Image (cartoon, rainbow, N blue to C red; front, side):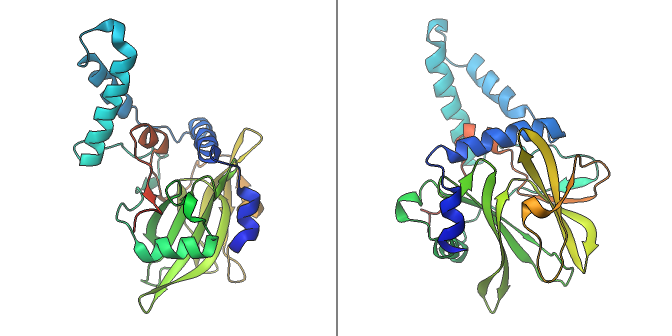
Length: 251
């Protein structure tokens, strides 16, 4: 992929915030509704916080920090996105993956000054039902994301080493692995946002690869879709709780 794709996507340090905002609007409109449990936890914490009502703003900041600390400590959890009937889901892996991290840096040529603000989200999946897992990773941050989505890689693992199978841009979460297959591979369904319109791009495997996200078959809803969603994190509430994902600065 190298520089050519990423220079186009580079929008500055606010890109990830824009991406998250777009995702929030799209998910709300499409029925991928977030569980409001995190908001309730924050509200309860606020009610139990400062006894001085005049300092409500400071109390809110302190309570958000408390919630974030609890989440990081594993005593609380941000639920994953609510998915339509017929689609199960899983959140991204939480264990740092050094070889994957190094491969992202090399392939996307991420400058060191962007390591801390670049985060990756990955899951294992078997796209061709051969019993061997592939890895799908989405990389979000000001260097690898734009208003339309983030960069992603599909990887295989052979001989203990990772190999890039395909590169993607304009990827938004969650990525749905459809039960339907095309030429022996499961279809990928990815949220696609264009001029405030929410669509889903169905990527069908052909001639040894999936098409680019904008070139997929566009559908207007997930009604009737069966499958499993990966990277089904509620990233809006996670970011508010201080959970950004696995950082490239972590080795």
